[in-house]
Image (cartoon, rainbow, N blue to C red; front, side):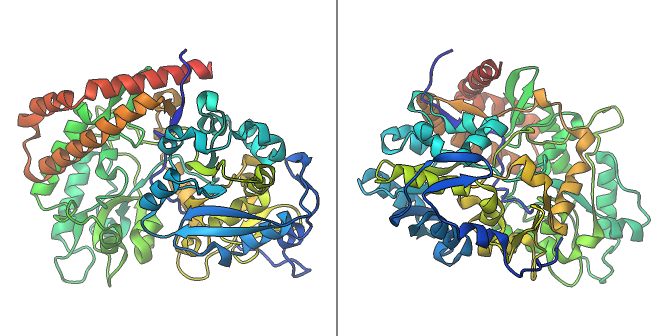
Length: 539
């Protein structure tokens, strides 16, 4: 097997599915045990993962951290806790906009921060390996990272860049559903119109017609939108390829018996596109679905107003998609194309996956790498795993005397809204271990999303039919950078044209020919080789 200067690509990664993930009593002492524990600084770091190598922390040092966030990390209590425990001062370079340009300038200079939080990609690292520290020899200062590698081997796989060693660390959060989105329908409307929950695409079409014609929201206006989806979010309607028995990995990669291919050249994809045109031509799909690219604007149609307007849609969760109308909706299991389909499927990710591939990088400009690694270790410890993602303790998360944790119910709005204002979320490192997951009480919103995911438990593809996380070498990465964006753009363009105007049957062959000219065969070869090597390494 050839050795590669590896670039990790999370082919099953979340969209920025930034994840929507009870409230218990305050402890008798009135003090937060996390705050108490971080107040105990010493010359040797110890934590739940075991003993670390000794680090002299008697002298306070500065650590410069670059992060892409609109927040001021100095205002987040969790970072003050870590500064106190490790006797360091964080000097933040928090970039709200223009991060790509700023990153390029920084990487081209000799003035690097000590640590990068997220923002960098595997491409950045493989193109500039000499700028970053191989953390392999520093792992004795980071027992939490060692534990993560042991408990979730995928984390070490994506962190390792061939002979260059461990050049980055990922973010792993818990409470992750397997599905990338859910499908939902307005049950209140169905009941009002005396309709059954549809189970086939044909039945769905009839339901959508009734939604359009019979004023199910009861406001006397013809303002109902039978079917809608946010154009810039996830799969949207192409999860319906599972109605024909074919599911991909959300990145439109399919895997059948070890053979890699792409969803958008399949008969199932063509069938779904033709079905969507049939609905669109009858006025059953929001006519602005392809032109409204602002997610907040698109989402307002289904979540705001005096009455619910959308009958059938897709989204991360029922709560996030339908807002104050949540109680009117139910999660709809995968439909069947027709009764000849015995096993409809729902697209989902592999069992073992991570949120952010490159969440923490140590640069060679750092003058105190052992001390920095000690600090990095704290971000991967239990005391800060939930704080980094949901907000600081004890206001937003709280450790209980028995060692369990509570993610508190939001005071106003949703968990999603609350965490974005009070934590780095997907912009920094953390590790939620399986053990910590088992000891954490979730707020209703997060638990509801896991319950919604369970609707599809019996419709998930077999694990060996889900494309896994793979790596590409530098040359392959450059090729994909050249091939994939143009192919994706062309596919999306033709999909929108065919849904709105029809013509997929007539143009299908020329469409496939154009994809070949654009390098589809070579892209397939790259993915197949990466998959084969991953399987070799796994065995």
